Length: 212
Image: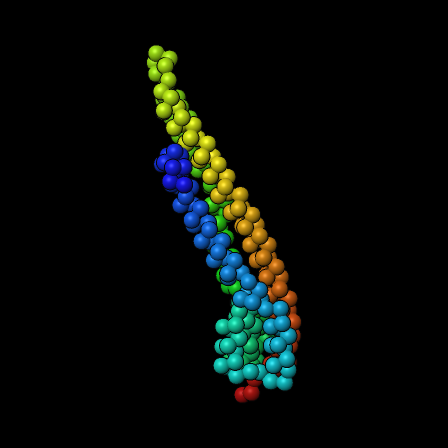
């Protein structure tokens, strides 16, 4: 590996840095974008069961918010009703939607950086290829003779950087699209859960004018 890095020249260090960052982002997103951490399938049913007859206590709502990203959205709706029993349907939906936007933003974290690496890696590989071509042309002397060592070094720079650029870009692009699909799925799941929760919570709101 060290011999390859030496043969590829200094441009390969940019690609190595991109590969390390991309690997770290992929591992982090694989861990964070698990269903158990974002949107447990049975969570909305559990919340509806617990709140069938009354609103839960504050510590229960806090535990719900700590459960998952979806739990944060559901907890926001519960807190809104607990804090303002006369809350309107529009205000309640707005509170849940605001929490949902924050939750979606959390699930999209680092995806832009990963997509940038997927787009930039081939360009960095092309940059290394150009550096290699410069080395190749530089190996030609004015008399027409060539320097075999410099020629071989230029070819190595061109080929290794091109190959590593693609090696970094292809997995990064694949995981970026995979994560984007996961985020869209979780977003739909949270929207459907919120749509079930809001009518359920409206049963606990106080109707009619406020008492003087």
